[in-house]
Image (cartoon, rainbow, N blue to C red):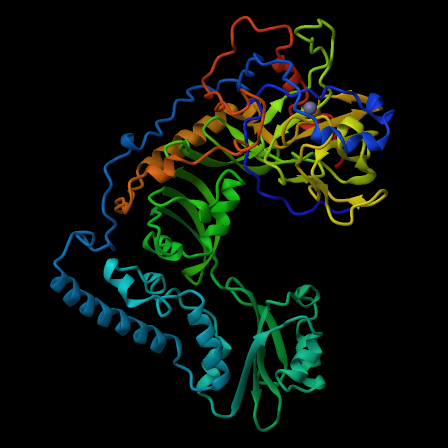
Length: 617
Ligand SMILES: [Zn+2]
């Protein structure tokens, strides 16, 4: 079995957003009897009138209510923002051009001074090797040198290195030998080559000496799992070529050292870096300037993006936050010798987008089922199991409905799949890994791909505009591999994907596979989740947010954002906006109205509940 491919972040869309259907309720059996040539002509046919112009929208999927699920997310409920102490008060006030120039020059000078001070701080060693290493260290966390002086006028950013202070006294390090003229210090990354070769080629150390290192580290398994980014530093006696000391830095909190003792023996140890853990609660304002600056103003380093995006889990991403959006973050930092080493994880966060149509989001780290996940206010977590949505973010425009009754003819004409509305050319992904059974046109299905999955499940992707390059029968495809592109070939009235699933040769509701969607906190843990959430909510509420930044243009442009799928030339009614989440089930309902239970059959909440349907585990 192939390894699971990397997870792809996808926008989670309420699958209940259903539009009315076009007419293509033809089973594969019927289609396969038609000659393939038939596929060429239907595209030129005039679109058939919709069968169900008055099909009511589905009731949005409702989640079982959690106790006291009221969360005050209105930003107006938040405590008044307190200016962050490190931000100069009045920095946003209007200054006369002359004053601006004067202050600009002053702060510019101050900024330059700061940079020189930093460079001085980071480059104290005379040895060329260590100087290079120091320069690369100073380049990584501090980017002020690259920033134009002008931005220093607008706001003073905290120096996170200085903020940490001198840190705790640590163990003896090779760097203290830098002033010793009798030793040569070399450092670099391990890279992909064999360690012995690296030592020989890069550090000019004899094989014999390298074996002394390896012998010293016998019993440590770190050399068996060397990563190319691991950093070595070696001190060699210039006269004899003997190694005085060696260090291997896997991370700021995992450092190994071998040091020559009085008897000339190299003895190895893992250094005690006094690894610690601290919590930071901070507010970020997206200013539209460099993201790194927005984060730094909140005392965060760039690398925090990784842990925040991990918490979002596809629901949003730091990089795509519009100007004036805000983040409240409670994040755990790992420290080594009392100084920042890395971000561990986000405990809770709040994201309030400046776009009025984006709902505020709060996420809480919580352990359920033996692992941690990020659950929202309603206790939901994005779920991406073995079955992926073929077009992430595309709304369901017509659900599976085996009992669909033709409103005029009064005959049962089932809809044997799920339609996803998406613009022409949208990539279509394999719902899971499997073997391609069919690539090509097939009657009313248009350009069709069929994939066979374990468990006697087949997936069908119809009306494609084209196939993925080189895709052919008997190809093995990975979960979420692109297999084609949305189109309107075959019997179709507009660009969309008809996605069908057969189990044991019978059409089943594709949504019963529980495609990407949400998972709820386990019922038995809801009380505990609510407790954790209440605690974290109070802590999030207490985080002050930076002041909003001025908008240059009226927010008209922001409001004109069109939901995805709107461009598709769906039949009339297909372009009506998605019903609000509070919408109730339409009263009455024609015979063909879909039943919610078909979208969310009981016991199908999680594919792991149905091992026969889950291709993995
Ligand atoms: Zn369909």
